[in-house]
Image (cartoon, rainbow, N blue to C red; front, side, top):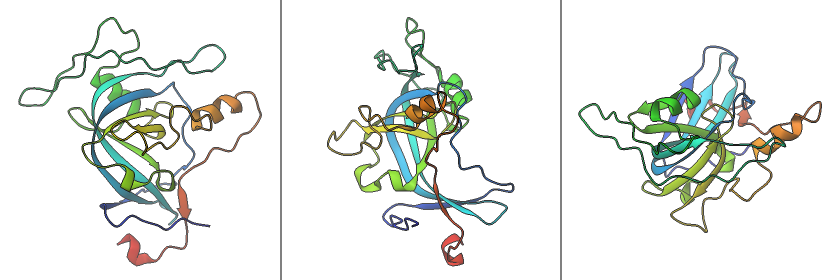
Amino acid sequence: MIHRATDLSIGTSHEKYAGTWDPNPPTQGVGAAVEGELVEIRNHNLEDGTKRHYRYMAIKIRVDLSRKRVFDASGKEADTQYKREKHQVTGFLNVCDVVQKDDPHALTLDQLAQVTGKRISGNIFEFWSPSSNIKPKEYRPGHRIRLKTLGDSYFVDTITNLTDAKHGNYHGEEVLDTWDSKIQTAKQQEEKEIPGPEVDSEVNDDEWD
């Protein structure tokens, strides 16, 4: 059953992808962990060249802390310990990188852009999640957000609302059933299904205009 509860209190964007969209989350790389201020949250609808439709929640964050995700030899993720020095964005072009030098896993903004491929400008980055996994009413601009990406991509693996602890934990830090844990299990099994975005091949055309 397709989840159609698009939140009308937030904006909606549409994108047409010329090829065939692969809804399976990527698995390359260890990914990144970031913290920052939520700038925007919106519904994002994607239509590929085969006329299939995918629904995501797009999240823009003003990132001030970022580092690589770290896993041990068994695939267990180490706790994310952020250094408190943050990215500072100054100057006419809003370009600056100040990170804690003694953190071997810290990422500069340029390095984070290489990991995610979804830098909007300066220290603002966009991340996507299947729309059924995030409740927009629990995330508002100005909230402080911590999230982790699924591999080297802009897809959300875990997200936590640090402003309101009782809200906003989709695949939170303590929940084991995350995409990354599924991927680690997949390395020990021949095949493992990974959840993807909502797919709807029977959408009212007006909804995509």
